[in-house]
Length: 423
Image (cartoon, rainbow, N blue to C red; front, side, top):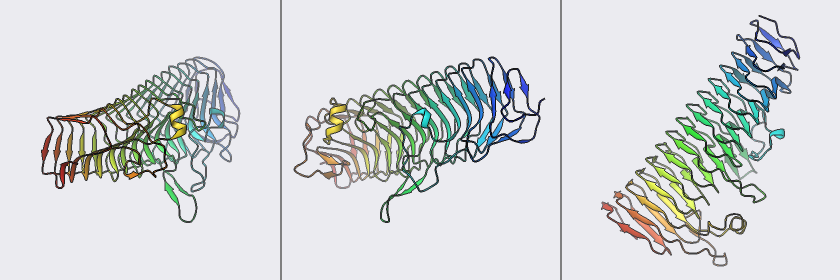
C-alpha cells in the first residue's frame, strides 16, 4: 500500500492506504495494464475544480474501490481502451447552482458540465457498480463505443444521471437514476420543473444502444433522445432498444425521442407523467407491450411521425391514449422533409381502457389538441392509419379523427365507450 500524494503518477499496480487525502491536483495513471485499488481511500479536491483521477490514452487499466469528491470531474478518461471502473464512489463534483439555467444538452466534451465520471473517446470498456449520485451529472460519455454500463447508481442528480453524446453500440442495464431533475424560474409568472434534466440523456447520433431494466423515475424526463441540433442539423439517435425500463412519475415525459428512427420500446413502464412517450418528428419506431397509465396529457403523443408500429400496449386512464397530429414547422420541414404529416401507422392488439379519448388523429393542431390559426401553413392531411384488433373499453371516446384520410378500423372491440365509439 502507498500513501497518495498530490499529482502522483501511477505506473504500476497500486493499492492506496485507507484515509482521507486533500489532493487538488489528483492522481494520474501513466501506464497501460495498471490496476488501481483505492481500498476505500477518499480523495478530496479544492473548490470543485480539476480532476480527481486522469487517464489519457491508456489501455487495459482497472480502477476500483476509489472514493472522490469536490472536483470538477471525479474521473476523466480520454482516448482509452479496455478500461474498467468499478465500485467507486464519486460525488459532490462541480454543479450549476439550482434555479439558474435551462440546461444545454448540446455542450461538447471540452465544455461538459461537471460530473462523477467523464469518458471521451473511450472504447470497449466497463463502468460497473459505481455510486455516482447526489451531484449534477453521474456518467458523461462523449464519442464512446461498445461500453458496458451496468448496475451503477446516479440518483438525485440535478442534470443527467447518464449522458450519451455521439456514443453507440453500448449496453446500459440495471442502473438507477431516480429523481434527476431541476427547477428553473424564467420570470415571476413562468417556471419549469425539469429544465431539460433527464435520468438518461441520449443525443447527437447515439445509435444501436441497448437500455434494459434501468430505473429513471421522477426525472425531468426519464429518457430523452435528441436528434436535431439547435442549428437544425439532423443528428438522429437511431436503432436503439429500450426494454423493461421504468420512466414513470416524470413531471414531463417518461420517454422523449425526437427526430430519430428505428428505435424499439418494449415492456417499459411510462405511468403518472404528463406524457408517457413523446416521439415528435420520428419514424418507424416499434412500441410493444408497454404500460401507460394515468398520464395527464397522453400515453403516446407524436407530431408528424410516420411508419410506427404500436402493438400489445396497455393504455389506461390517460387523457389521450394515442395522440397523433400534423403541424408545419418551417425549420423542421427543412431538416426532415419526409416527416411531412402523421401517416402510415399500425395500431393493433392494444388495450384502451378508461381514457378520455383512446385514439385521436388530427390535422394542423397545436400539441394535438388545439386547431392552429388559419394563417398557419398546412401539412398534408394525416393518412394511412390502421387500427385493428384493439380493445376499446369504458373510454369517453374510442377513436376520434379530424381531417384525416384513409383511416381503417378493423375487428376492434368497442364496449361501454361513454360518448362515442368513433367520432
